[in-house]
Length: 371
Image (cartoon, rainbow, N blue to C red):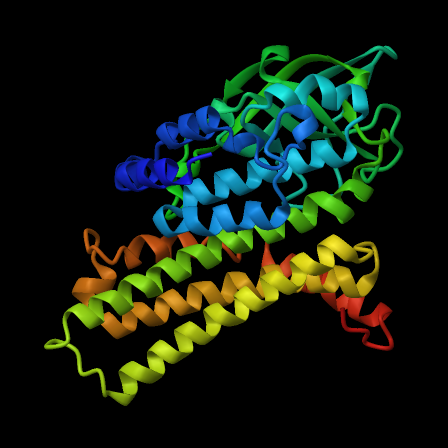
């Protein structure tokens, strides 16, 4: 797998896709042809057998060029690992060897961003599930080769009795219901969509109505790890460009200025803090019981801290280099785009929702056990 080609293609087209709010199809084609879409698929299924650490490292590098592409890749890997860990052997054997780009269909219009419940009913005759799924946000949905969708289990008596289902692109009719014109993350093409069709009940991932367990142990933690890597890579790239700019223009910058040096120190400190928290949370993900309160607290804290610190670091860099180099579009430092992209971080599964959850979890952990 040649990551250099993907990085070059991503950088070449990033500005245009941001300006036009179009999907980075060139980068996706390189991911397909290079095998990167199967990075985390085990070798027995024809994948690269990569680790979660490998996934995060690739995401970090991609985000230096384009945070949208990094998020697309990380979220695809989240879906792929979910299939690897929770799909039946039969489903895994039929899907993983030729795995294409996977999109997540977990949002619904009436529930907000609550991942663990669903309002989307399905009908089953015991052999087939009849799907009619409307979602307000599907990242890269029109270009996906398959989808992981959440639906209410048939005969469910509670919104929390949610199932996760794999749906191939050729198994459903796909309708795009609207456009995508956001402030940042413009190349993710996270449009509203409707999927209708029928799939065999064997395409339920894990147990029927068992999505909560998948979400707690795999789906949710991987989202926070992958998102954080994208945010961190964006902030790291921004700092690298600023440092190189300052060193190349010493006549314009007083490199002994206390204001400049402390500003750089704060930005670097925020980035290093997020990086340390990311690696620590990855270690917990690989070794700990993520159903326990302290581990859930850590995973949620990773997301809230990373989303705030990475945005703040880039915002401080804008202040350091000023209007022309930091705030205006077209600057080679690309801080304006990084700032717009990172503004989405606290909103992408709302920090407020996670802080409320962590408050409740903190009350359960009377001994304040640190992971």
